[in-house]
Amino acid sequence: MKPVVGQSAKTTVGAKCDGATLMSLLVPQDHADGQGLPAWLRERRAEWRSLAAMVTLPTARDEEWRFTSLTPLLARRFVVARSEERIEHSSLTSLVSGQGDGARLVFVNGVFESRLSTPDLDEPGVEAVVLSRTRGAPPAWVAAHFRREVNRHTDVCAILNNACFRDAVCIRVAPGAVLRRPVHLIFVTHLHSELLAVHPHVFVSLGTSATASICEHHLGVGAGAYLTNPFTRLEIGDGARLEYIRVQNELLDGFHLGSCSLHQMRDSCVTARLLSLGGALVRQELEGSLEGPDAVCTLGGLSIGERHQHLDTHLRIVHRAPRTTSREVFKAVLSGQSRGVFSGRIIVQPAAQKTDAKQSNMNLLLSDDSRSYSRPQLEIYADDVKCTHGATAGRLNEEALFYLRSRGLPLAAARSLLVHAFAADILSEIGCAALRRRLEAALRAKLTSGLGVGELP
Image 1 (cartoon, rainbow, N blue to C red):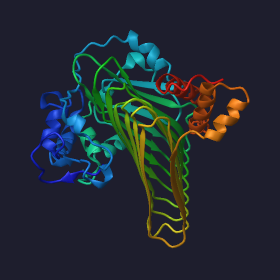
Image 2 (cartoon, rainbow, N blue to C red):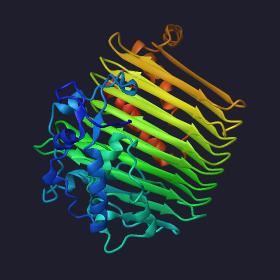
Image 3 (cartoon, rainbow, N blue to C red):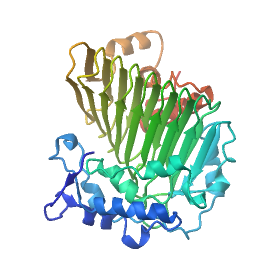
């Protein structure tokens, strides 16, 4: 989300909130001094904090935020979890171990937890750096990531993340290296008595012709409201292949504001899935830049909303080089009084001749009070392209229901079959079979318990 830099109106609930007030609401100064981080990084964070104090939180008056209000954030005062708080790890062991096969790096309340993580990655050509465990100077590629020029036009969530994170993980896959199993980055918010704010920070770099699968899981444990504000940067080198999955399964009282920045070079291929299952107010943003010829980006997403959930997906894909390809298929299943928002923007720059881009957004409404808002957009500045977009919203097909019931299926079973068929294909192309099965099980559990459509026949 793009911040407004400069003066803001007097801060009231529903009005624009200036950065200084926002910082005090989200992260009190005495909890955000970066304790445990290396000195060179604390100096860099001071620059981000100065920038954060200058931005303005967007409101529904901003075009990109017409259907999503952050007013509920301003009605609460979040704090960063204190490092001295004791956490009962035994209660989390089964939770994190059930997220999938492969290497596992677990962060609880924003800090790395070695007792819940698997041993360090031992794949050849793969390097993982957790900032809280580094001693001395970091590798040059890690330092280069955090020393990027501070950009006033960076999304305000990313600015807040850089100003407030307590720990970070950086993963580099060397040229030609292949990760044989997925890496699971599990971020757990463990609630006590305070309203916690957690800012996970991830950086992934794939060298030329490297291959990897990365899965982010965002979970909540306990009861109450909290804020998760993750930021992920993905740099994909020439000919590299990445499968990236982000699963947001926060508690239904949680807030989730997620940002992902994707940069692809020549002949690279990225397949990404964004799954939004929990949370009271959720905004997932992905900004992709196809910077090299013949780069391919395939995006898929699924939002499952119930009760009063508000689930917002915001995409911006920029084609900067010739013969680049992007595919976007995003779906939402909404019940109760839930709201689904989709904004997809594809920009084709003048140099991106022969671009091939397709975008599709489909929404299934299971109740009279559920709503979907869709804004597919194309901006084309080249004259030799093939670009399409479309959006649909509707109920279950009555003819299909009638057909299934005429074959002996009860109404609940027929509804369940159609809803599962609508949603499950987003997961069907996930490369890791074990991960795909676990995500399909989580989807079935959400559809059955949350939406009440019944078990599959």
